[in-house]
Image (cartoon, rainbow, N blue to C red):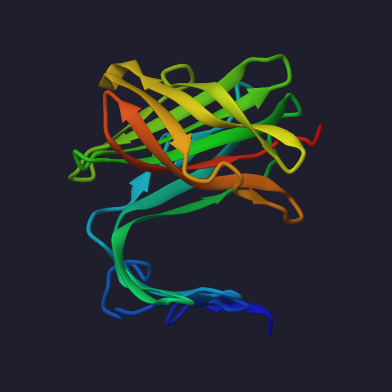
Length: 235
């Protein structure tokens, strides 16, 4: 089979990519994972261990997406520590880091007045984290939401308007102008940062094409993050 999954013990795979639960005694099957992938000139094998609780966005996981009431159920595990090996043609490289897993589902599409979204997950050097997104409206306005996550896992969700994400610079990617530099502000937390993409050309040319990739930040807070953007048509 090209792809598949089983619930117990948890395992999911697509071609040469696989994610498998490694601790059958864990409270959550996704608390401890082994992830492998392979391409033409690389491979990696990573072990993920959750060191904090799940975080539910919006109202206990009910994440509103528009003024009209569109919503999804949405939670994250933003507390993975990662160890493993990256295999390149020149040899194996041991790696460590952090990971973030999202689960989201809905029975309805976005509003007809929404043309795409810009989403970030941010790991700050303080140990705090932030999930934030803006859904772009056809009239030029936007609907936003955010969740601030403390190092101990306590969190606060923010409604539309609390977070601002302002594009500062674009890159020519796959025949379209995509904003790869952003100003992100959450005044209630004193956050005001500028983010830049490590690889501005991180375009995913799949059936529903989109941009996603790691980002750097500077400003009031330091750390690393990840950016995902949809709804940017070719010129």
